[in-house]
Every structure is written in C-alpha cells, then in structure tokens.
Image (cartoon, rainbow, N blue to C red):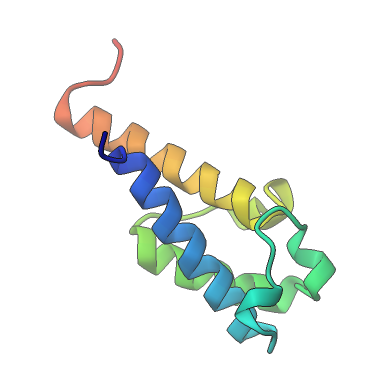
Length: 98
C-alpha cells in the first residue's frame, strides 16, 4: 500500500527541518532527534525566527511566532504544519466537514 500524501509530506518536512536546524545550529544532521526539544540543541529566539521564516517560505503560509515553543520538537512542529496543510487542502478541494 503506498504512503498517504500526508505521510510523505510529514517525512519530507521533518527531514528538511532536521537538516535546516542542524545547519542553523552548526550541528551534524544526525545529531538531531525529531523527538528531542529543539531548545536542547541550543535553539534560541534568534534562531527560532530564522527557522520560522524558512518554514513559512517552504509551506506557503504564516506561522504563529510562538509555534516553536508551543510545538517544541521537530516531530511536533512538523505535525502541526502538516495538519494545517491537510486541513487547507481539504477546504480547497471541498472535502472539509461542513
């Protein structure tokens, strides 16, 4: 059975975010565990702004400034983005519940 579009999107976003975070924080990509709070790697408010700006450009919508604190791990942040993207897609395609 092929992976669902949301599953593929989640994997792609998570992979991108781990790589971007590693580059931004000058760490090895392999050092980033999606389940570990990003602050454990040294993410501060300045780096968070950079991550948010790049994420907004990648997903095409505005992200709340406190999203990285509300969703502190790569996995949680990715899940929140995918949830918004799937909901937006359902609304556009008419699949959203009334």
